[in-house]
Image (tube, rainbow over all chains, first blue to last red; front, side, top):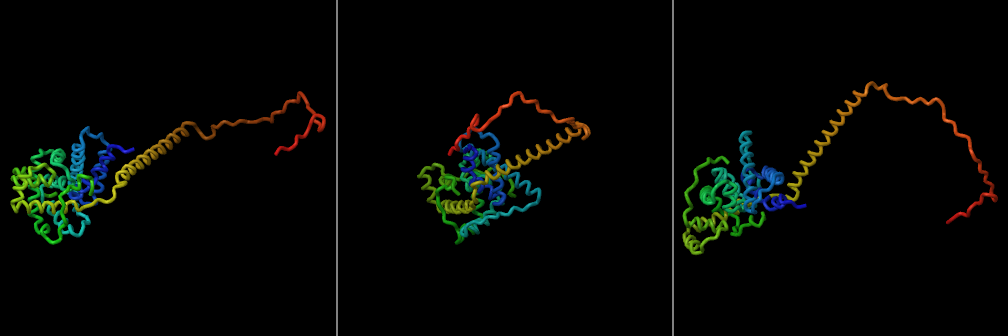
Amino acid sequence: MVTDADILFTTHRDGVFRYLSRIVGQGDASELTQEVFLRVARGPLPPADAGARRAWIFSIARNLALNHVRDDRRRGVTVELAERPAAATQELSAALAEALDQLPPLDRDVFLMREASGLTYVEIAAACELSPDAVRSRLHRARLQLRVSLERPMRGSAVPTVRLYDRTRSGGS
Amino acid sequence: MTGPEVAAPDPVAEPYAVVEGFLDGEAVDPRRLRLALDEPAVRDHLVDLLVLREGVRAITPGSWTSARVTGITRLRWLAAAAALLVALTAGYYTGQRTVAASGPAGGETIVAVESAPVAPAPTQVIKLEPGVNWTDAPARK
């Protein structure tokens, strides 16, 4: 029998994974993603529309990520981003990991929910307990800071091709 | 994750707000978008953000087919194993207590049989003779 939790898992697992990967590293992100959806399956789902449920799932993911990073800091663990990006994005991806680490945590979360997972401003606002205008401002500030930090790799020869459509909205990876 | 928390930023400047809204799937006025894109700095901003987006989304998760199921199944197996262990332990201690309460091992009941029972005498004897009151039936296939 396919439950609501199963549908939510299928729909949002990749977005949650991408968001968590940029915060805790790809290895821990798999485990944390499962933990997010175990919590979703355990508790009663909030009676809300799809967007609000998505925001709710990401608020769970955000809390788990914050706890994970806090625990790692307590243990003195260095988180490595063990990813294998495509060759064209390798340099950019490595620089991106460092640049994201320099962002204020809330700006980074807003940026990643938008760019890595494709949440709307309203969904991010619900997940991070902000107003949509605050989301817009923080997103812009994060983007400006990342543009400055990543100017060299972004203007280098090995950059990925770009597209305008939003792949994450269709649940693809 | 090490960056300090800072105050909310200022509102986004008009051309950047239009371009970023467009990039993020918001509805924007095409005239305002055209005006924004007239500025080279804003065009650069748009292209850089597209490159940045590709970089952020470069991570692809592995197979998820049974990821969640595996987690739940593991929990179920653990719960089943724990229940079995509790049942075995409870059974063992219950058995221990029952044996202890039933007294020494020599207390079992012994039934002594003095003699074998005797069959009763026949009340009627039937005699069967072949051809008289006994006929062999032919074998059936």
